Image (cartoon, rainbow, N blue to C red):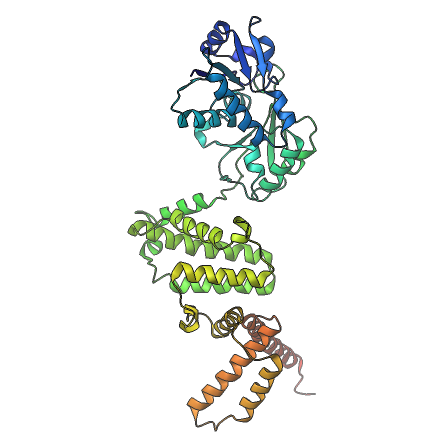
Length: 464
């Protein structure tokens, strides 16, 4: 079996490597993935040229096309004369058919000769005048279009290859908007590697407004103007903890940071309760600082890394959402929660009769009560109706013991509060937030009353 794969370069035939040109001139026939490439018109005239373009019309998706092309290349390679297969650019840059050919060849123990070619990357670097060693990220447009959040670091430049249609451009735009602002400048690179090569910079939100997007189009996304990535933030925290860093940060441990983690969590909750987006943005950053600090301390202790933390939660989220990632059918959100708890019990060997299902007792009391009540409902534990709860509250209040019986008084008050939390749950109200809001209003009203009283005093005329 003989399979040779040649890279045709990014554009004009002048960019063919000498090795590729010699092989093409010495061959009798060549199979092209597609004729839609500028170099094809300049191939040696004696060559019998075949292409797989017809497969693009017979298959609905590219995956099917690539699978068929790879299978046919392997079959052609089994002939006595073997096969010369030519693809745009470099055979190992953005060429799914080549990856499939190599995989099939490995399975059969066959060797494949790769003849390199310039890729669209070199042509793009020339047009942009940038150095890829500055952290350039390279991603395929179709891969990016399939994601809801881009797998990119916004502090580094990115090159998006094979942006071959307005539809793909639209999908890529939607994905990028999950990380970049709508006004982020991006640059379209057209007909790279040809004398007609052009660049056009425009706001990200206009990306799919451009009509002349085709198979020779590449997208360049520059880094955001201000540092904005988790990796940059983690590096800052690591520097604060390093020798010569901040004395306070260097002294912190998991235990000393405990109170700060709790305080930042409550400040996030306060911003949520206030419906203050600007405050929420800031407080989430403060909370993230605590998380990164704990992760960096773990790195220094050799316990785990932030990547380990993310790996664990990613696996957990995928595993506990089989209705999203594994095709499981569910009727409603309640069934989702029941599945979640069942999967969790299986993972941890959790027993259903474990006190409070092993929920953290450090939770605020009202929150702990409501979570226990919600869990009981999911576990189909019989609980009082709303009317029964009101009756229970009235009965507990009527039977309140004398004030000097503190222990019994506390027990009865606990019953009342627990029942009130359950009533709130029935009504779809978060008891903790409701009480916090009322308490804040109470404090504001006292401050307002005192301010008003001082105002009256200032204007009071004793002689009157």
